[in-house]
Length: 135
Image (cartoon, rainbow, N blue to C red; front, side, top):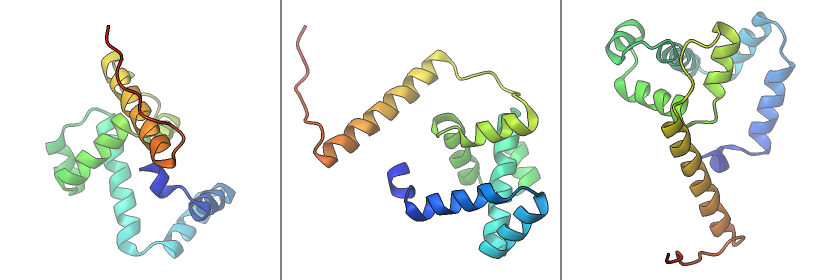
Protein backbone atom coordinates (compact mmCIF):
# COMPACT_ATOMS: atom_id res chain seq x y z
CA UNK A 1 0.00 0.00 0.00
CA UNK A 2 2.77 2.44 0.93
CA UNK A 3 4.36 2.18 -2.50
CA UNK A 4 1.10 3.48 -3.97
CA UNK A 5 0.91 6.40 -1.53
CA UNK A 6 4.46 7.64 -1.04
CA UNK A 7 5.59 10.07 -3.72
CA UNK A 8 7.25 13.44 -4.16
CA UNK A 9 3.85 15.11 -3.75
CA UNK A 10 2.89 13.27 -0.56
CA UNK A 11 6.33 14.00 0.84
CA UNK A 12 5.82 17.67 0.05
CA UNK A 13 2.47 17.60 1.85
CA UNK A 14 4.09 16.03 4.91
CA UNK A 15 6.77 18.71 4.88
CA UNK A 16 4.06 21.38 4.68
CA UNK A 17 2.25 19.88 7.68
CA UNK A 18 5.49 19.86 9.67
CA UNK A 19 5.88 23.63 9.20
CA UNK A 20 2.65 24.33 11.11
CA UNK A 21 3.22 24.93 14.81
CA UNK A 22 -0.09 26.31 16.07
CA UNK A 23 -3.45 24.58 16.24
CA UNK A 24 -5.08 27.54 14.45
CA UNK A 25 -2.55 27.28 11.59
CA UNK A 26 -3.29 23.58 11.20
CA UNK A 27 -7.05 24.15 11.30
CA UNK A 28 -6.83 26.87 8.65
CA UNK A 29 -4.62 24.73 6.42
CA UNK A 30 -6.87 21.69 6.71
CA UNK A 31 -9.97 23.79 6.01
CA UNK A 32 -8.28 25.17 2.89
CA UNK A 33 -6.86 21.91 1.56
CA UNK A 34 -9.80 19.61 2.36
CA UNK A 35 -13.44 19.71 1.49
CA UNK A 36 -15.76 19.92 4.49
CA UNK A 37 -16.60 16.26 4.02
CA UNK A 38 -12.93 15.23 3.84
CA UNK A 39 -12.06 17.22 6.95
CA UNK A 40 -14.98 15.70 8.87
CA UNK A 41 -14.03 12.20 7.66
CA UNK A 42 -10.45 12.66 8.87
CA UNK A 43 -11.71 13.83 12.26
CA UNK A 44 -14.16 10.93 12.47
CA UNK A 45 -11.47 8.33 11.62
CA UNK A 46 -9.15 9.82 14.24
CA UNK A 47 -11.90 9.61 16.87
CA UNK A 48 -12.57 6.00 15.85
CA UNK A 49 -8.85 5.27 16.27
CA UNK A 50 -8.82 6.95 19.69
CA UNK A 51 -11.83 4.94 20.83
CA UNK A 52 -10.42 1.65 19.52
CA UNK A 53 -7.09 2.46 21.16
CA UNK A 54 -8.99 3.00 24.42
CA UNK A 55 -10.65 -0.40 24.08
CA UNK A 56 -14.17 0.72 23.11
CA UNK A 57 -16.35 -1.79 21.27
CA UNK A 58 -17.66 -1.36 17.71
CA UNK A 59 -21.25 -0.81 18.86
CA UNK A 60 -20.25 2.05 21.14
CA UNK A 61 -18.10 3.62 18.42
CA UNK A 62 -20.93 3.45 15.88
CA UNK A 63 -23.30 5.04 18.39
CA UNK A 64 -20.93 7.89 19.38
CA UNK A 65 -19.32 8.69 16.02
CA UNK A 66 -21.82 7.58 13.39
CA UNK A 67 -18.97 5.78 11.59
CA UNK A 68 -19.84 2.71 9.58
CA UNK A 69 -18.56 -0.68 10.70
CA UNK A 70 -16.50 -0.74 7.47
CA UNK A 71 -14.75 2.49 8.52
CA UNK A 72 -14.17 1.15 12.02
CA UNK A 73 -12.79 -2.09 10.59
CA UNK A 74 -10.42 -0.21 8.28
CA UNK A 75 -9.12 1.94 11.14
CA UNK A 76 -8.72 -1.17 13.31
CA UNK A 77 -6.71 -2.83 10.53
CA UNK A 78 -4.42 0.23 10.42
CA UNK A 79 -4.01 0.14 14.20
CA UNK A 80 -3.05 -3.53 14.16
CA UNK A 81 -1.18 -3.95 10.86
CA UNK A 82 -0.35 -0.41 9.75
CA UNK A 83 2.77 1.69 10.09
CA UNK A 84 1.81 2.77 13.64
CA UNK A 85 0.97 6.33 12.58
CA UNK A 86 -2.19 6.35 14.66
CA UNK A 87 -0.41 4.73 17.61
CA UNK A 88 2.41 7.29 17.69
CA UNK A 89 0.00 10.23 17.68
CA UNK A 90 -2.41 8.68 20.16
CA UNK A 91 0.39 7.79 22.55
CA UNK A 92 1.81 11.32 22.30
CA UNK A 93 -1.59 12.89 22.91
CA UNK A 94 -3.16 10.53 25.43
CA UNK A 95 -0.48 8.11 26.60
CA UNK A 96 -0.56 4.40 26.01
CA UNK A 97 -3.92 2.97 27.00
CA UNK A 98 -3.63 -0.49 25.54
CA UNK A 99 -1.17 -3.31 25.93
CA UNK A 100 1.49 -3.71 23.25
CA UNK A 101 0.84 -6.18 20.46
CA UNK A 102 0.97 -9.80 21.52
CA UNK A 103 3.96 -11.81 20.34
CA UNK A 104 1.71 -13.77 17.97
CA UNK A 105 0.29 -10.61 16.38
CA UNK A 106 3.78 -9.07 16.19
CA UNK A 107 5.10 -12.16 14.35
CA UNK A 108 2.14 -12.11 11.97
CA UNK A 109 2.62 -8.40 11.23
CA UNK A 110 6.37 -8.88 10.71
CA UNK A 111 5.72 -11.83 8.35
CA UNK A 112 3.17 -9.84 6.33
CA UNK A 113 5.55 -6.88 6.03
CA UNK A 114 8.43 -9.16 4.98
CA UNK A 115 6.20 -10.89 2.44
CA UNK A 116 5.13 -7.52 1.01
CA UNK A 117 8.78 -6.42 0.79
CA UNK A 118 9.75 -9.65 -1.02
CA UNK A 119 6.84 -9.27 -3.42
CA UNK A 120 7.86 -5.69 -4.16
CA UNK A 121 11.49 -6.75 -4.72
CA UNK A 122 10.39 -9.52 -7.08
CA UNK A 123 8.23 -7.08 -9.05
CA UNK A 124 11.22 -4.74 -9.38
CA UNK A 125 13.42 -7.65 -10.47
CA UNK A 126 15.70 -7.34 -7.44
CA UNK A 127 14.91 -10.78 -6.07
CA UNK A 128 14.16 -14.14 -7.63
CA UNK A 129 11.99 -16.87 -6.23
CA UNK A 130 13.87 -19.89 -4.98
CA UNK A 131 12.18 -23.21 -4.37
CA UNK A 132 11.58 -24.20 -0.76
CA UNK A 133 14.27 -26.44 0.69
CA UNK A 134 13.38 -29.93 1.79
CA UNK A 135 14.41 -30.96 5.29
